[in-house]
Image (cartoon, rainbow, N blue to C red; front, side, top):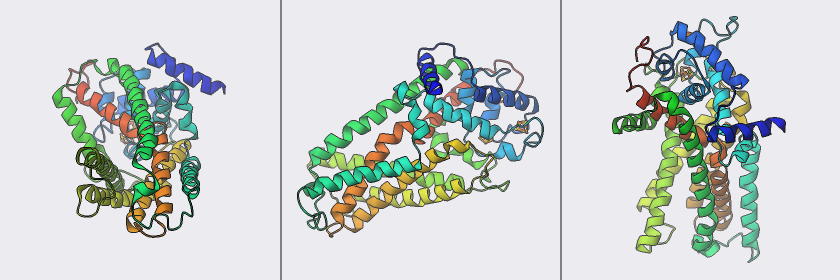
Length: 391
Ligand code: SF4
Ligand code: SF4
C-alpha cells in the first residue's frame, strides 16, 4: 500500500514538474548506461545508443526518455561482453523494460489509476470481457431467448444504435483523454532533457515514418531482433506489423461506418464490397494473425530480455485484441444465424473491455514509444551538447 501511495505521490510531483528522487530501477539504468557510454559497442543497433552518447550523466528524465526509446529487441544483451554472469551485470533490455513499465504508471492519468498497470493482467482482461458479454446476454434474455434472437441479421434490433453509442462513446472518449494526458505529462518531463526544442515538420515526419515502419525492429542491420536466443529473427517485426495495421484497419472500418451512418443515413451491418466491410475483414484477419504470432513469441521469449512482472499485462492486451478480432469475424460469418445475438454480445463485451483497459495496459507502450521517437527526431537535429560522440 505504501508503494502505491508513493507511486501516486511521484506521479503528482512529476505532473507538477517537481524534482523526484530516482527509484532503484532508474538508478540501475543510469549505472548500466554509464558503462555503455564508455563502451559504445552497440551504437548501430537502435536509437538508444546515439541518444545516450549525447549525455554524460543520466537523470530521471533522461532515463524515462531512453527507456521508452528502447523497444526491447534484445540485441544489446546478446552482443554484450559485460552481460551476466559478468560482474558488471549489464542487461540493458531488462533494466529498460522495468523502468518503462514504471513510467506508464508514473504518468498515468488520473494518477491514482496508475496502479491498474500492476493488476491489468491476462485473467482480469479475459474475465472483464466475458463478464461484460454475460451482462449483455442477460440484457437480451430479458426480452426472450438469445438463441435465434438475431435471425433477422439486424444488429440494431438486438441493441439499438443510440444505446451502443451511449455505452461505447464515453468509455472510448475517456480512454483517449487518459492516454493524451499521460503522454502530455511524459513529454513535459522529457522535453527539457531532449534539447527543449519544438518539433519541426521534418522531425515529426521522420518520427511518423519510424513508427509506421517499426524501423528499429529490424535490428539496425535489417536481419531483425532476438526472441528466444541469439539468432536474429524478423518474426517480431512482422507480427507487430500485422497487429498494428490490423488494429488501424479495424479502427478505420468503425470510423467509416460512423460516417456512413451519420452523413449518408446508411446503417450497419454492411456487406462486401462496401468499404467498412473490406477494411474490417482485412483488419480482422490481420489482427488474428498478428496476435497469435505475438502470443507465441511472447511465450517463447528469452527470460533475460524483459521484466517478467509485465508479462501478464502484455498477454492480457494480446488476448483482448485476439478476442475482438476473432469474435468480429465470427459475427460476420454467423450473421442472420441462431448464434448471431450471442456472438454480438461476446464481440461487444470484448470491445468494451479493450476500450476500458486501453489507457492502463500495454497499448500505452505504442503511445509512449511514439512520443520518445518524436523527441529523438527533434534532439538529433540539435548540436551535440558534449561534442564527443557522433550521431
Ligand atoms: S550493452 Fe554491453 S556491449 Fe553494448 S554498449 Fe553496453 S556495455 Fe557495451
Ligand atoms: S534492447 Fe534493443 S532497442 Fe533496447 S537498448 Fe538494446 S539494442 Fe536498443
